[in-house]
Image (tube, rainbow over all chains, first blue to last red; front, side, top):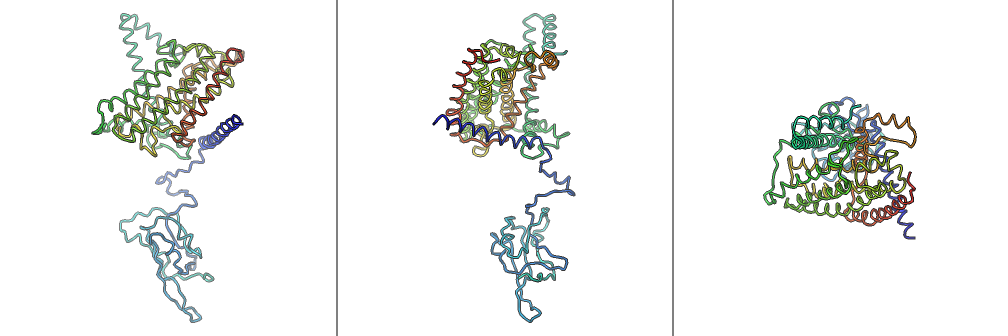
Length: 158
Length: 358
């Protein structure tokens, strides 16, 4: 019946609108849900969201070892040439030549924080850090080398 | 107990003792004008700040919190900024209409203040067709919007103004029909009669189903009439920059902005008067003791409390619901609100004739 459908439509609309109002009413009365950070005032206790993307970093463990194999997947994934992987060949203890990274150059000034390199990385060598205070007086300071000097690849990462 | 009508009576007697009745009337008019203008200024400051705080809290933000304690001087600072800004008139604009439009918007808002009962026996003009006057004068608002849109010589402004015309003209219908529900039940268009009819309970309780439907329709229709989201097609920030006031700046923009908020206050005051009893305290049937306790709260507090509750409700709508497209907007009016309110007025008439209300 037409009139039944009509009334059902009106009822459904009212129900969904009330659902929305309940949500905003909850937020209105529960101020602990507020996520605004009063940034310069609470610099010490800043509480950033888990998925906040500040810059790409390469974590190193305490033995100064990283997980990067130099496969250049991140370089290929990057849409605007932010990452340059410079590889070299090192001799393994068995006397074999093996590809490893010399430098992983990261141009912060080009990066759009799209996260594609982190997704592309097969060995989880790079992650997004939560630092965001990137202002510098010299543009060259924005070109970073992600791997620490004299760092090696972790054992077991191929 | 102090009350606003005692103050006004004292002033009236004093003026009549000091001056001739003609001069006393002129002075009273001036005083009323000053009161209305200062009420406008206060409403502008309070409602803008309230809207910003409500919107912030509903969107899990903090809102203005820097100017003054808890940001209470934010709207004052904004007003000062708008006052010292240059009021530009675009080259191709129709200068007279462009500069006239914001004032018409304000004049309409001022005229609408006349029949509103702010407290017991405290009303500028208790004319016998008060409700009709309100719905008639509030339609003039669309002229100022059309004028602003046309005179700006800007396609966005014109589109916003035309949309606003379609919107206000169609939503007048269901707002008028929902007001008629109360008129049918009360049997009078006079604001004071309508309020006095609610002495033993507000219409929203006494009139049950038809009045509740009328109340919901009234709130939806006045949200559309005051051009507020979810019906802000006249402004339409996302597609028309600012709609009819795109070209306005400085104080002329502020007048439009103020007129919007004053209109929100007025329609909420009318809604509170018709459905929630105006300045009438909450009375429940024959509970004498309870009714006496309620009478101790000043009537102006009751009026402003109810009005601000409705304003909060309209703000709640604005910051919860998604915006409508123009065709959806007109569908909502012509296919849903108008048939429902036409049926509802039949129901209300039956309830009134058969005496099924309390």
